[in-house]
Image 1 (cartoon, helix red, strand yellow):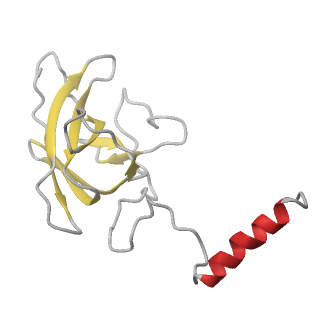
Image 2 (image 1 turned 120 degrees about the horizontal axis):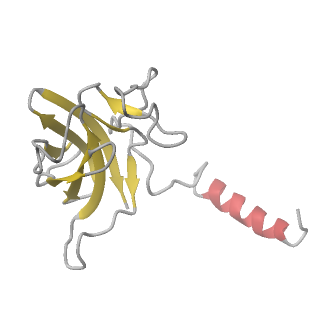
Length: 168
């Protein structure tokens, strides 16, 4: 370490001790009161023809009837849908065995969300389809506020619920 950096390091450490902090909190730290969904010990392996993992190092979450690319469930830096829209926008794909955009151009998937840690208007969600060799349903979600959100997707008799932390 450079001798020139030593005084700066000492100043930083002494200010943390002076103010009683042992670490610098990150803005996207999840409070203990938000039960974010964690990866399963036994990750879902979706039915054929879907790959065993959604992307390198990732995992699936859900059931063999309705699933998403799984945790991490901390979303930060979400953009606004339009410059004048105050909501925070996230898009994610959902998969269902047997779903076909040819026979169902408007997916039957309904996605709702509610904030768990404070009062808030509900999540607004819109669903469209994604074509290709492994069709899916794309969900655009608009969060009216930051915080702890429970999201539920329903497709006919199948349901999938998870919790996310939406941060700055």
